[in-house]
Amino acid sequence: MLLNAGARVVALESDRAFLPDLQSLENSLHGQLEVVYCDFFRLDPLGCGSMKPPAMYSEKLFENLGILAVPWTADVPVKIVGFLPQKKERNFLWKLIIGMYERSSIYRYGRIELNMFVSEKEYKMLTAKPGELRSYQTLSVLWQTACEIELLHMEPWSSFLTNSKTRGLGIQKSMLLPNNHLCLVRMTPRWNLFTGGMTTANSSTFILMVQQCLAKRKSKLIDKLNSWSPDSGSKLLKQLEIPENIVTGHLYPEEYRRLFEAMEHSKEFSESWLYGEFLENTRHINF
Image (cartoon, helix red, strand yellow):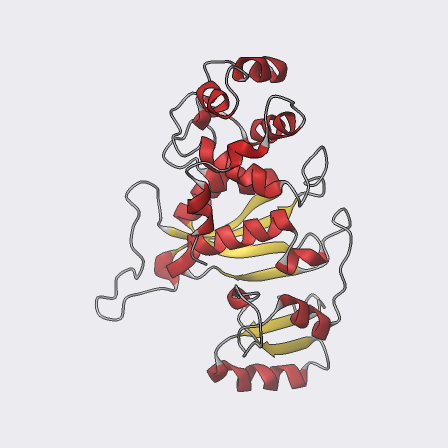
């Protein structure tokens, strides 16, 4: 479909077995298709040093493709289509969103649009609303704050994934959320993400704040604020016109952003609240 539309397409293929057929197709399309031996989900691994394909640094990949960085407020420079690996789906969602807030990895080049097939349970988590305490999580707030999220298509797992022994579904069903479909989801970074006080320098603070607040989604927000700066919670919530009795799992993503920006400008709060019990959890996310 992309080729028929006349788009320039770059195919990143991590399995050598598929390269010959893809390269044959590449040769027949007169420059419209470029095939690269690369694993998108192994871009920019932790550490440094020489890199052996299919792992690769995004800087090298984009340089080879002639893709230049553009300002964050510019139009989307690149659109990526793919499948999130099921075994580490949640880990890759964390890696991508942290890269977005840091404007590192692929996001050094601008507002890279993702069009990804994700499991239904992860889609439900990404788009969960305040009050849906089973599904409304840190990633829900971070992705909704950073991106426009649009469901493009839902396809039953039975359409393309079976277990070779039983001919049944090859994916485990979720006990808490529906997981009967694979969802094609478009995630477009917001042009105004880094305005109003949010920067690449303090975005990690925002991530940690949300993570700490939503660790216990039925706890009162004012109690969490007072634990960071004694007796300051009531004043801050009044300033933002947020009810004092609200629990953390009922606060909207845009309210979390407003709260963060107010804390950044408040004399009562300092960065000392960063180093709480959940800092270690963030450090040990296994990508």
